[in-house]
Image (cartoon, rainbow, N blue to C red):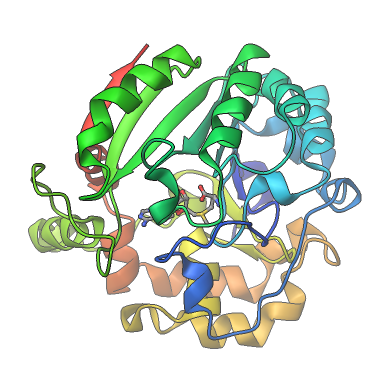
Length: 323
Ligand SMILES: C[S@@+](CC[C@H](N)C(=O)[O-])C[C@H]1O[C@@H](n2cnc3c(N)ncnc32)[C@H](O)[C@@H]1O
């Protein structure tokens, strides 16, 4: 059974809304209704203070939204750092909503963490993939965030239409105050979003498959995240899951190998919401115990959460520069 004191990390979807319309986003694969949800400060305060004080890191990433569409984001970061100044905050964002002042206020809480800004090209190419977002606003916001001491990383997803701009984008990243510039492949290619011609790589799904085939019989158990990392995923609607894949699978049913998950989530969805049920009860309840047991031998869980997980992540990074 999972206990609150084992939890050292949270991955939180602060909002399920986003101004971006990125073509390969999971938002477009929903088969269940998942509207506009936010975790507001009053919701966040329902998490036990003892939990917030014991956390080592919090990542404000999420499957479906963008943290900057949460009106309480800065207040929540301040509340967390007020309780636990050593917790490391991280996040990823398209960076094109909110004002420069808003980003400067947030940057103060990310001096020892990182914010990954998704910038897939320069002014003339960025929005080919990051549809609905504005390159110039992102650059302005990165400068404000970094100027306030926040550690900003520039994440560049490479396509045929932007591969010629990598060197220039790297210089721009350093100029505007980023501490890292890195290039990764898209999870998919197609239509006007074609594969680059000059860079050789495998897409994430194929790297995972290659490593999965290498797993020997003795390694075939998945290392489920709440157990291996002490981490949990909080979705913007308040539901709590062992990992982001679990919630994404329930909303999108994107992979038949993970088919044990949707019936469990459907059965327990009302009982796993930290906005209405104490987190310790959720962790002790049947949703978590059943997933933790079934995940051990599930092939999707093994493919995503195995001893090679960190190696796969590293292999995905095609260019990596620190400033
Ligand atoms: C819904 S987004 C959440 C954060 C934020 N809205 C953003 O765009 O960065 C989830 C993640 O998917 C990533 N993503 C979006 N399009 C992608 C693509 N084509 N290939 C790989 N990752 C992608 C984003 O960079 C982000 O890390």
